[in-house]
Image 1 (tube, rainbow, N blue to C red):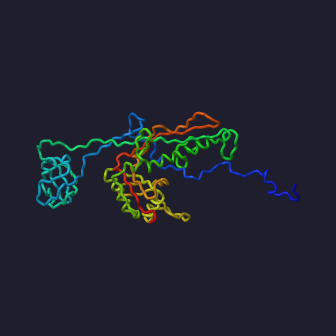
Image 2 (cartoon, rainbow, N blue to C red):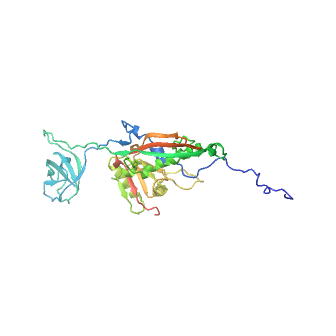
Image 3 (cartoon, rainbow, N blue to C red):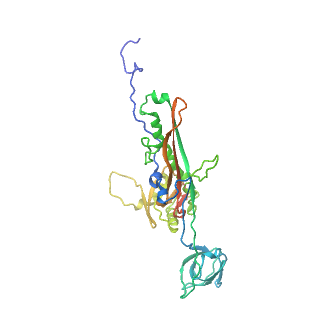
Length: 384
């Protein structure tokens, strides 16, 4: 028994707690690549016999327009060796440095050419000097000649199963009251998928599984499933191999960035999107901070670039916290995306004890068409 004045701290047993009835998650919940590129690539490129755990897409090119000489060429030689004579035909005009060659005939991998064609001058050329196809110039009344051609290729990827289990005891589910959690099972489902339990991966509203799927964009590995081996989908790095620039710790600069955009454009791509982390975004902003059109405001400071205007098109910047800090992806948006073989599905599992148990499962694959239409800058400094 106590004597004297009763104060707020005299009885801690019966004091009601003031507490939020809403739980705020601090972990990142955005999946910008999923939002931008989507999971309907199978429809966009018209896949048939879908779904299947292996997805293929068909690609082709027009005539190959670059090659190289297979020997050192002096200023008078007219029989010139190349690596692959099937890329040439009589009547072709090719550029070798500043000199134009007119191809008179082709015998296996040896071209008979007219040197210094047109207004150009014959010159010496080193072994492996690049040849660039310009156009055909046929003589009147010529017989037809066989035309070089290309055949389609079939890049492919495998599907990947993503899984999350939820297991809640009977007491937790039916005999425990919690602040901010009216239903523990549904709450854990929301954390798995995002949203209010349905989960659609919208920016700022994703859960663990949606983030797992987002990260396959950057870290996916292409693995064929077999006994004891989980199949997995390759990400962007599994496909974009031509226009990859290794910066080797050098600072990212405007020339390196614009060269990468030009590389993709040079192969016929239409790059219109940049995916990068915070450092890459800050660097891009610094490149163009002095050439920004702004409205006068007296109460706002700072500049953020959300789109870059280049000679090769406008590119939107997609800030992505899951992107490696030292990488920047330059992409053509309509050529990249996920395929949805099995949409997310929550299903109950057998009850074998005093608990409720279920799982969420989805199966997806990833497509990168025309890898030369994209570019990657990798390994740049994240401090300078």
